Length: 128
Image (cartoon, rainbow, N blue to C red; front, side, top):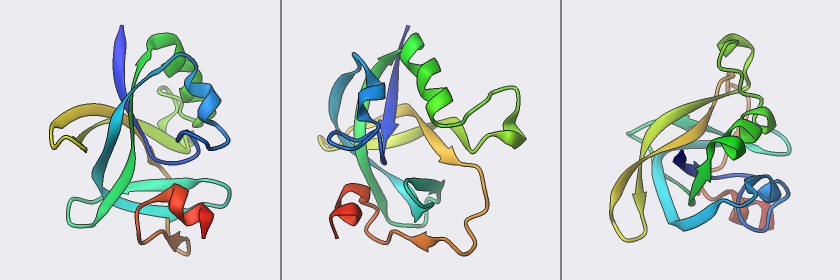
């Protein structure tokens, strides 16, 4: 089965974990409402419909890739409290202004004391 997946951090094209997407098919750039935080060597997304946009990429992935990404993202469906991220269904807006439903990884820890990435653009944040 194929799943749409929204990525916004180290899985983006050109960044260090992109290779874990394997044979995923790039669909287009997309965005969703939320806040992005600097967790150290990667970002954490918190959904918030009242905030700005978090920019990312939309991919079509197969079940095997999704299982591998769950491990990469420290998501354990049977151990939600121990997971660093939760994989959730969200609405994203594509660059062609189409709203689609996709999976993404939501940060599952407290963000108090973490730096907000105000632009919502992790790749740009790394360049600066």
